[in-house]
Image (tube, rainbow, N blue to C red; front, side):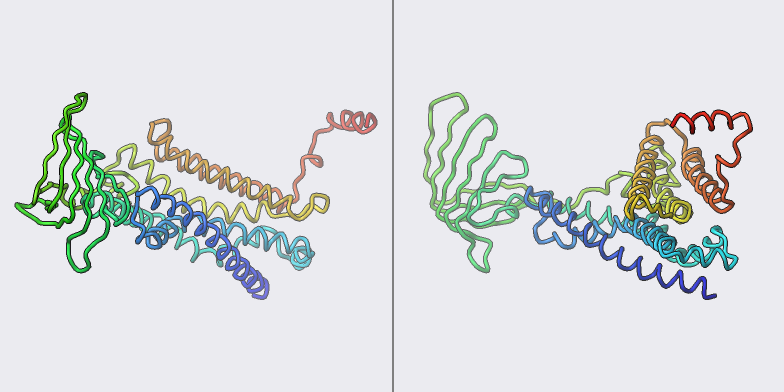
Length: 373
């Protein structure tokens, strides 16, 4: 009982601290990326924080997996370094006996990772896509900011207004430059207001002038007006839901087993299966090399995490192009990593060594190599 409780307490402290650090780093990166998207007009500046929250929530399964992996490796490495492992080994606990307390601590985190990968990930993708669609499909007049030249959604017009009139859908000093139907036109007016007619949106200009000429010709047509109406693109409603695999629920992926859907499903299941494998790998890889320093083993462990995580991502594309089947990928990749981790753990548990088990005919070669050195 003391054995398991002492390990779980240290794992909880290390996991909490690691999780806070990783979430802070990811939030900083996502914030910079989100601000860049807002500056390019991809999302609304008012939705930056909400968009960032959805993005971090979608990446939480990977963050939890990495935090759990680092916490376990750090705790076990510290126990090796402070000779606590020797105490537990001499008291009758083998290395494989650490699997039970590790999984006893990790199973709630593993459950959260699986639920978020299968259910929360597509929901966050759908929310961020809806936010982008609503902002991209807003009307041309909704895009206008006083004092800023703003291009229309079609790219054929440029709008400018001096300032809005408070409490009214109107503005002063309106400027519109357009290129349509082989003609260039520049329209200016002292004021303008928005009116809706026949399910269409019009910008009604008052007391202005319009300059128009055909492209490639020097003739210029100038006209003054007291009132002139310009039809703008109406504010569009969000389009039909995209059929991208990452936006579909896990149930929908199973009902429609196309290559793209199976690749996405393999990736989601891979997040859950890899988290389980990382518990075994953490116990198998955690060690201390006195000559290598404290960070030598951690670098190797992090490299193992990056390689495994990239293989999970590559597996999605392999299923999509038909290079490997859905079941074969799960069995070969995750089953293979699990067997490799268990084999390495068994090697360390039984203290098996190739040098101690080499055949007799290798002894003369070993002696010659030693004398030559």
